[in-house]
Image (cartoon, rainbow, N blue to C red; front, side):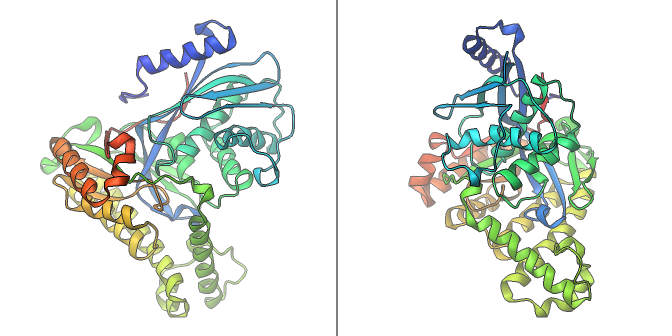
Length: 424
């Protein structure tokens, strides 16, 4: 896992021992999937429109320890979620909206992984006996924990059945879990970041062409960049609000608004037959025809085009080690998410505003869809402790009840960059 400090040897050992106890097998037979959480410093809310995004993982995430079953039975339990999940891998899985009785929401990602593999013509004969353990308190916090679980289940089922899949194939498989099985209308940002990231780099992903490149920086390994640019930490500030994305109608509503804006703009330019996504609209067409959009649709399109520009500028800033400029772009992204994309809620906006006046913060914005969860920020490593104390104090004043619910009363978590998902 590169230079990442996660998972620790103790975490790996505990997960393996749990599976050995469950299965009656030797600890040495236990395999482990490591599936990290992701952040998106720039490229907020535009992946579903074929935009360009910048992403990376953090050194927190999901551990799925498992052994292949002797038969087709799959059985999973979890450290943080109640109950067991059981199903057979030789039985057809239907999309969750067609299933009358659901056994524990967290297990739907495992069933969704089987559904995706079956949908693409793979026949599985071996199930898994597994134990899922996530980083404490980070579920449904805007770090794509759901995608991390889906990917972990895919990799485990593939490993148990000797299926060899490329990262690109698993990106499409996880998209099937979320789009076809769960009914979300999201793009490929989350799974791409989790499956492609490299420690110390930003992953630049074109969500239209599905091509990606890695953006290196003079800040690799936490060293100081040119012109005295400071090393950084990733600061996650939790609102205390948790809401599973698939249960929030606001997300799919924003996607639909972006598509409607694209449809109107494309029709105005004589391209009625083109798929209505904003990536198909030239910026010049938007500028010339935006007067035809209703106010809310114009805002969604404005966010898309301005965010794409910020990604391009962010690549240059990151590559040169200019964290001050990189942070300004992140802050501008956060403001556009509030004003143009109109996501967030009062506690999340308060948290963003607190971060923007916190000592040592280069820039901040919502993480994930922005309706619940956390904000991410890049902070000067030398001021990280001071920043942590400031955010904790100020958010407790603004939202005393919610702050007490965030990570057991701890509003802030400091992280480092992570690596990509893998089986060890």
